[in-house]
Image 1 (cartoon, protein in one colour):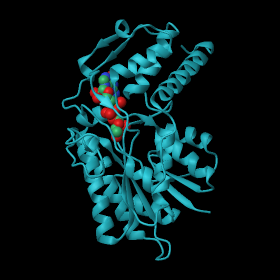
Image 2 (tube, protein in one colour; image 1 turned 180 degrees about the horizontal axis):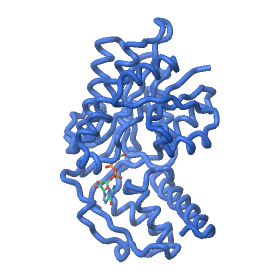
Image 3 (cartoon, protein in one colour; image 1 turned 90 degrees about the horizontal axis):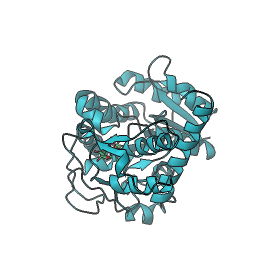
Image 4 (tube, protein in one colour; image 1 turned 60 degrees about the vertical axis):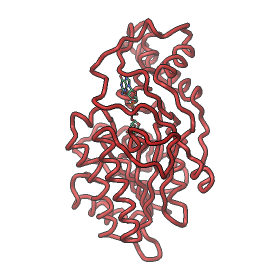
Length: 331
Ligand code: F7E
């Protein structure tokens, strides 16, 4: 039975990945920090075979102990402060966890090691935010980075550290440069879920409108469930490498609103949306569009859920959840 250690187990991707790994027969261990972490119970209910291990990406000894205890075949480092807007307010903490956390995990792997015949394989969750003020479109593995947020800067540090450890210590360490990936499990602070959840509440008469920031930025949005498959595929390769994971389609926030409101049965969205400058960012990433030809050719990966299907499934899940809460008198 293969053993996998996943950091960020309570996040959207951690939840999809642990389900995927369990379905493939892995024993999955999730790194979790903090006493009585409220999300621990949720992930245990979703994945009863999961084992939780104490550890904190800020604390190398705890990571060494976790890797030593679990002796994983594969490590997936998904743990991060991942909300770009928050990274502007908590820049140092973001560098500490999203950036230095990668270095600490790699050090833990290097120190504990695996056997020569079975070295531990490492996946790093790199991000399209690293491209920031993009130098070319579409973006590929060769596009230079120009991050626009403390989060993007920290991800570049993590990405470069992966390359450096791969070259210095011959670690089987791969990076997935994942473009935005969403689902009904996305946190409510991210724009897609904020829109689908608010829209469901508008439909049910629980809310009047949505306050948003910049509607002109464009993102290459895919479905998170498809993207965790790419993570696993990377670690099944003979050699480690970096891969862009994206749909190859880009849409503005306006287009997301258009599709979502149309699905919900409205002719237009404009009268429901107001601008709130609190959601504008000090520096913005205007356009992301990924070229995932390398992953498609080498891994055989391709996305299964398209943009419209993604918006639909998110809206339907939010409508079902809000309706249920309403019936129970919780709204
Ligand atoms: O913003 C604009 C905002 O927070 C998308 C993370 O998973 O993907 C994600 O980062 C766009 C931005 O995601 C609101 O200005 C307008 O242009 O949903 P988001 P993100 O910043 O693209 C990358 C790949 C990651 O790696 C990150 O971890 O939407 N926007 N109005 C808004 N955004 C938010 N959150 N809220 C608004 O009200």
